[in-house]
Image 1 (spheres, rainbow, N blue to C red):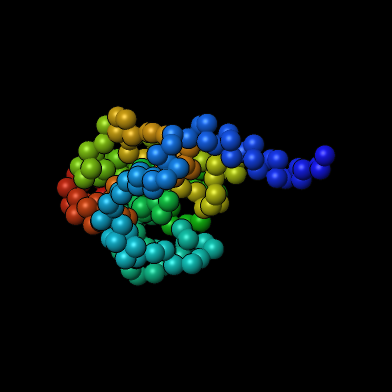
Image 2: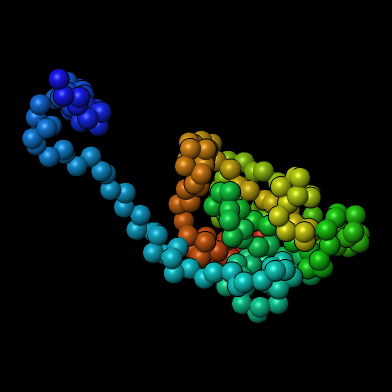
Amino acid sequence: MRKRNPRTVLRAKLARLLALTLPVPHLFLPLPNLMEQLHAYWRMEYIEAPRYPDTKRPFTDLPALGDDRAALIVHRRKLSYLLMNRFPYNPGHLLAIPYREVGELEDLDAAERADLMEAIVQAKRLLAIAIKPDGFNIGFNLGAAAGGSIPHLHAHIVPRWNGDTNFMPVVGRTRTLPQSLDATWERLVAAVPGLTGGES
C-alpha cells in the first residue's frame, strides 16, 4: 500500500472540517458585506487645523511665536498662560503654565504661584462657560514617575462629563474627540471676555 503525503492528508482533513462547520450556501455564495461605515465629517477640520511647531522646549517657545492660534494659547496673564493640550484627555483639556521655566512648585516665587493659581481658576471658569462639563480633574504630574513628560511645570485642567469613559482607550488605545482642536480653541477664546474677577 502506497504511503500518502502527510500534507495531502492534512488538507483533506481540513476540507472535511470546513464542510461540516460552514453552512452549504456559504461555500458557493459571496458573504454579505458586514462592514459598517462611520461618517466622520469633522475629521477634515482636524486635518486642516494648525499644528504645534517642532520644539524641544514647547512651553517656553510657544508663547514667543507671536501666533496664539497656531500655538493654541487661549489666554495670557502677566506671569502665566493657558494652553490647549495638543494630546487632550478630553475636549477642552487645558494646561496652566508659568512663563518662566521651572520644574517644581517651590521654584516659583510668591507672585508666580499666585498668578498660576489664578490661571487655574480662570481655566476652570472658562471651561464651565464655554463647554459646560459635569466636573473637572485638576492637578500636576511632578516627575516622570508621576506621568510628567515635559519638565517645565504645568497644571492640567481636564473637563469631565458623566459617561465620558468607554472601551476605546482600553481596547483600541484610542481616544474619541468629537471636535477639532482648532474649533475648540475658537470656542474657548470667544468665551474669554465672559471671565469675571482677577486679571483678564
